[in-house]
Image (tube, rainbow, N blue to C red; front, side, top):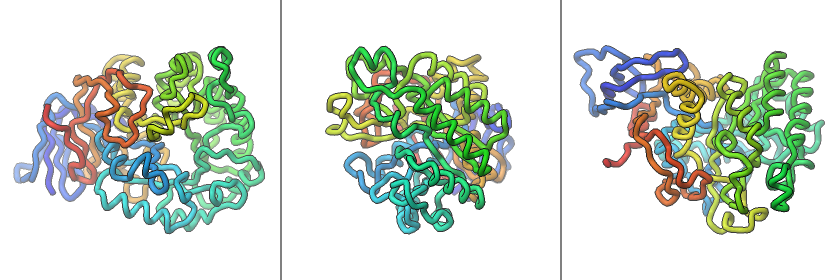
Length: 436
């Protein structure tokens, strides 16, 4: 398959390349950027006039809901949502049913995803068997099966000794441990602690639930030398602690969700269960610190935190509703909205693309295998994973129109500034927007 993308504005955030150019693709690789050989005969040509040609998005937090929760999301529907959002590579946590703690389960998931020929799926293996927090999994076997790291998903580790042993083992073999910092006992509430939680009579989660966990993780990192990725930092204090850890030289990276980047606890309004999220939405000062941290590089990546939830689980009293929201198809638009708010349109767009492409690819590093050298980038000879979008075509979020099986989103009715036109995965067009 030979593909020619003409007349687009090609942006490669990793190198700062930003020029109008043609892109030629053959055999799943980028043949040229700029001058296309006269004898190049494409099977398909895409006219990208007025569009941005960017690397395919890399999303570090996507729940596919399969196996075990097919009533909330099928592999086919969620991967269709991914390519519709320009996401060509995604990381899924291990909290499926059964838990991804056996190589056979990981291999089956990857095989089924590959058969769909849409986004690339990179599973996280369970850090402990069954996520029960007692016995460690066989990390070496899970890595051979295709896991890019190890996680407890939303299940905090109560036993610090188990966490220390896990970090020691991971450090010995160069594995990355993915942790959402939340103290098991302080993190049992349903909203962030503060005036709103008090007014609504809802149980709160204090910032200390995050900072206590971060202090524990960093202390164990100092003694083990492990590499840790922190999932969905949510507070200003958390951002400050991550900045200190990075300045100290600890091997730490972190991400933030689109929910925490744009919303605050006041958006909960009068018990709006669409705002029932994990981590809980915090105050404006926290949101402002997260936005600044993403801008200055303290926070490495922006994630959709895609968690489809079915109707029955969401339309319950706030405290009983299942946390989560769909986000794959909104990720690019919300990132560009943040970028436009954060600076000049040009620089803001480039940084918005960086936290969705080259920066999350850097977090994954060697775990990407043969994709490592070119993931999240547009380079000659690199894998042809691309997202082509119109930066001036706004659209309004209508949950019923989303391709994800999960229709609940806190951004219903929002106007997003960009629209994905085509998504290319491995040189093949995986998504093409319907004609207007």
